[in-house]
Length: 294
Image 1 (cartoon, rainbow, N blue to C red):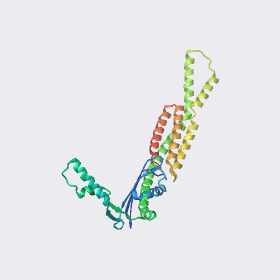
Image 2 (cartoon, rainbow, N blue to C red; image 1 turned 90 degrees about the vertical axis):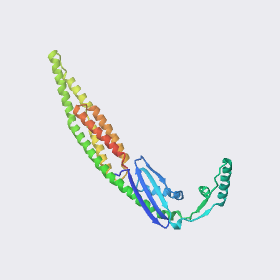
Image 3 (cartoon, one colour; image 1 turned 45 degrees about the horizontal axis):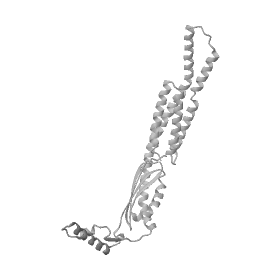
């Protein structure tokens, strides 16, 4: 069954390294592309996270968000950076004299600089951290995949209904097409009779039959109908597949559009032209929907 490219999932996991919160959002995209937002300290695990997501998401734009709230035991220790404190204190006093300010340099001024307090982090093995993150990431990805499957069912239902409408219209065109030659023959004979009423001409029957044969060849749409039905069959098979279907559907719809355009240009009857317009409308709608299929 096809899947949508739009979904969202969230997962959380708590352990000795603290709490990890993972959010995965996916939207339409031509290829598989991941944008991640995670703490710098976990940057080495980014590729591993992308590879994990790719097991479930084959195509689409993925936004990965990873938040880490450290546990009390993992906060490490803090110490003052004496060298930085001296430097900033002297710099602020110098600036005070230059600007002739009356305010005193306070502790809050010095603490506003980011490197005044050094947070010593405990070093952890990347594999140990990953084992803590993976459950949260897996839940987020599975939730997202579940939503993509659910929307995929809705897309399947919509596309299947439109395929049925197109197939019905093509069947009607197939029944109307043979009538074109008969109608043209009747029109031709009527015009010949009108001419004979006014003037005395010899009518070359062989020439008339040749004209009919040429017209029949020009308006023959049997090949286009056969190929269009073949494309519709391929679409049904693609909708039932468990692999990436979006690109294949887009290609099939392009080919179907080409056949319908040719059919419309060959068969110019009013009834057929109306059916061709209906088919083109359905194809446009299907192509819009196919843009969201993985």
